[in-house]
Image (tube, rainbow, N blue to C red; front, side):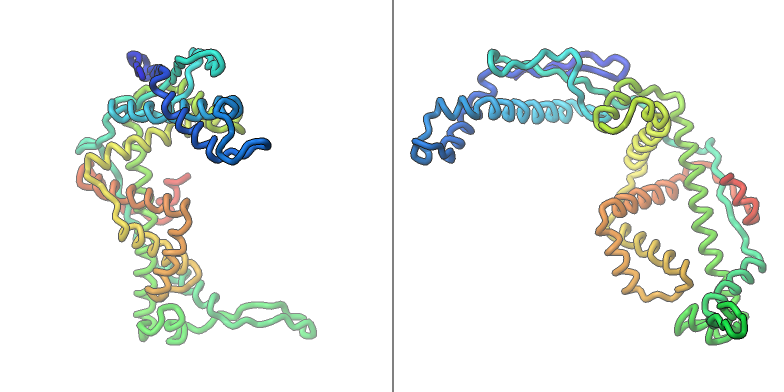
Length: 360
């Protein structure tokens, strides 16, 4: 087998594979014999169908399968041995000669490939990243407590005779409410309860500011890749080839976002290697438990047992899409944390209102 690769031009190249009879005949003959042993045809005993008849009936299909397997394996081997960081997948070249299985013995296959450009996504001390802190107000604490009193209040059904509608009567701010919100370790008085509520708000706000830091860090990294050229024509062709339902019009509309996602994927790969970032199973499970806890908190359940959180997290991780998403979020969390020791961090204390304006 001969494999040749053209010189890279605009990050694209052509890989040509030529297969001679010696490359495939032995495997084709082996598979024909296997089919013959299993074949059952009227007039012939099992396993005694003439080889010529088997070849006539199954030979072309077997040859096609053997050729496809050899091409795929050797194409991948070439990519790995030459350490090519290809984008998408190899596509059959428009210049490929037609394959004639009936009259030819030497077959040539040509594939177009595109490789990732060279770039440097690393930040340094000259890159400024804001890190926000939101100080919870008494009003925020009051609103959260009001939400608890309504959630654990008394349900009063509708009374048609009296002409009253169904409503919820807020419960008292007392030890009973403290226990419902925080369980056995609940604060003993209102002052302690308010402090506990404030701590929860601080944790919740920390998640929001952490999310914002990630947005700003990602933007800074992608800004470094603004002028990096990509083989866009190849990428568009690949997207259309692998998404049969997508139209050219839809591709043109969605392509800028696709390209940004590709840049981010490549940047993360580079930075993970640069900062030696790895993801352990325990970290993924811990993140899933964190998500589970936040979801329970949305329903006012602040004191969920660890065993229940663990079970909920395991169920979450059984879903491949959720698992993939959580792994990506763990990677990004570790990446953003690493950047705090590299970029110039600018602490900023803002109100909730001003912080919310950042997303508009």
